[in-house]
Length: 285
Image (cartoon, rainbow, N blue to C red; front, side, top):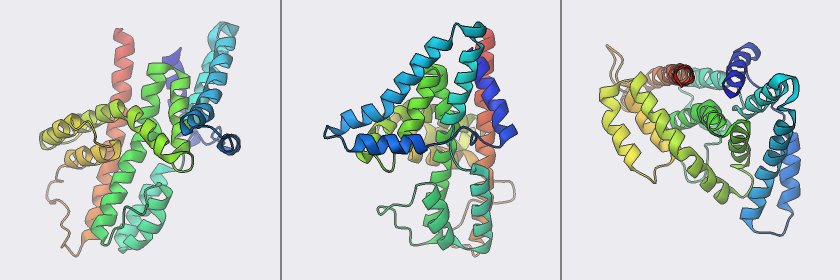
C-alpha cells in the first residue's frame, strides 16, 4: 500500500503543479508559537512540536487501515506525502534565476533567490557574482534534494509519518530552536544525501565525479548541502564545445545560466532514476 500511495502522489504532483492544495502550514505555525512559550529544554520543545502531530497522524492511520480494504489508509497516506513534499515552485525559481544570470543581476539573485531558498545568512557574504552563483547552486541542489528525495526516502523507510517528521523539521529549520533543529536535520540527511550524491554520479559524469563522491562520502562531518553541491557540480562535467565556468569570462552570466539549467536536468534524471530503482525493487522483492 505504501508503494501505491507513493505512485498516486507522484502522479498528482505534476497534475496539480505541486502539493500546494494540501500544504497549509498555518496550523503548524500556531502550534510552534504555543510550544515556544513552554519553559522546558529545547529538546523537549522540538520533540513536542514535531512528534505530537506525528503520533496523532499515526493513530489516525492505524484507525483507518482496516476500513474499505485499506483505501482510506492509502488516501490519507497520499495526503500526508503530498503535504511532506517541498514548498515553492522550484522550476519557477530556477527560471527566474536564469533570467537574472542572463541580465547579470546577481545582486538581485542574492536578495531574492537566496532569500527564498533560505540560504542568505550573515555567515555567507558573497562579494562577487561567482560567489553568489556558488551559493545559489548549492541552495538549488539542497532544495531539489529536500523537497522530494529525502521525503520519499523516509516515506518508504518509515511510512507516511517518516515523511511528515522530515517536513516538520524542515519547517522548523529557520525559526524554531534552530541549532537543535539543524542538528536533527544533519542526522536525518546523512544517509539519503549520500545516496542521492551517488545517483548524481550515475546519471551524470561518473568518471569526473567519482573521486568527489568518494571524498564526500568518507567525510562524516560534511553537510548535505555542501556534499550535494560538490558531487553535483562534478557530475555536470563539461558540455561539449563549452568549458567550465571561468570567473574572469565576461560572459559569466550566460555560463552560470547554462550550469543552472544542467543542474536542473541532473536533478530530473536523478528523480527518474530513483523512482525506477524503487519500482524495480518492489517488483523483485
